[in-house]
Amino acid sequence: MAELKNHPLLFEMLRSFTTLAATLNLSRAVEQLGSTRQTVRRHISTLEEIKNERLFIVDDRQYHLTEAGRHALQEAQDLQERGLAWLNNEAGHMDGLYHIAKSEKNDWYFHLQQHSLEKLWADQSKLLRAGIQAWAAACGEITHDAFAPVRDYLMVFRRASVGWVCSGVGSKSSYASWYGQRWEYSAIGREVPLLPGGQSHAAQLHQPFEEVRASGGVRFDHIHTRMDRGENGGPEPISFKRLLMGCRYPDGSFALASLVVRSHGLTIHGVSQSHIERMPSDLIMDHLTPDVILGAGDST
Image 1 (cartoon, helix red, strand yellow):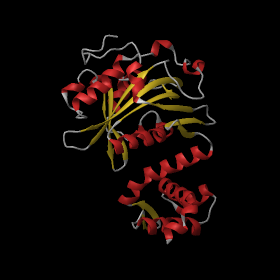
Image 2 (cartoon, rainbow, N blue to C red):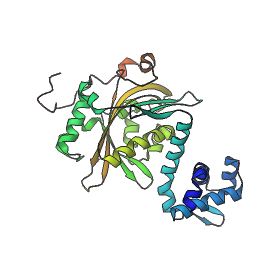
Image 3 (cartoon, helix red, strand yellow):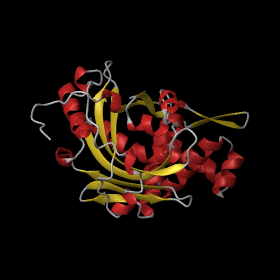
Image 4 (cartoon, rainbow, N blue to C red):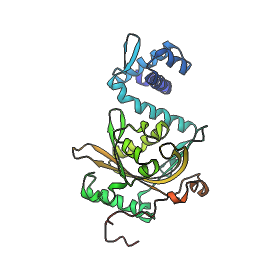
C-alpha cells in the first residue's frame, strides 16, 4: 500500500534522500530543501519502508549512509536528473533513440543524439569501425587479442558499489590527449564524478552506461558539449562520436569500453553545424587509423 500511495511524492522523497546524503546533517538538509525536519524524516522513513532496507544510521545525531544507502544514491541522483531534464524538455527520444539538449546558467551545455549502429559502417572514422569489429571478434572479452588494434584508444569502466569507476585509459585515447598525461595517469581507480568532467558530465554518463550494462551490447552517440581542457585549462567546446561496448573482465564481471573520436561530422537534432565546428579543427581524430586494420573487406 505504501508504494502505491507515495508514487506522487517520489520526486520530493528523492530530493530529501540525496540532499541528506550530501550533507549528512539534518539541519543543513532542511535548510537547503526549504523544508522541515519532520518532512525530511518522513520522506526517508517512507523510502526505507518501500525499499525494505535502511538508508541511513544515526550516531550521536550524525547521519551516515548504510551500504544500501550508498548503493541507492547514484540511481536516485540519476532519477532526479532525468526527471528534471524531462520536465524542462531537455531529454527524450527521437525516432526511438535517446536525445539530450541540456544547458545551465554557467554557459555549460550538453547535446547528445543516439544513432543507429548501421551508421557506423558509413562513418569516416576507420577507428570506430575497427572498434566494433574488435568487439565482435573478441566476443566482448576485454583482454582478448582482437582488441589490440584499438586498445590504446579505449577508456574502460567498472561498475562498483559507489557507481562507475575508471579502470583503464589508453595512451592514445581522446581523454588522454584532451586532458593530458597527468590526468591520464590520475584517472585510474577514480569514480566518474571525480574525473575532470565533474558531476555535470557524470550525470549524463549514467543512463547510457546502464543501458549498455543491461543489454551487454553496443551503443553509438554523437555529442557536443563543453569540457575543461588540460590540467588547468578552462571549458572549451568539444564535439565527438562515442562507441560504448559491453565487455567482460577475465573474472566474468562487466566491463564497459568507451571509444571516443573527436569529429566535426556529427548529426544532433537542434544543433547547427556551426556550433559543432566550434571545436578547433586541429583536434579532429577522424583521420586516425588503428594499428592493425581488422577485416580484409575494408578498402576505404
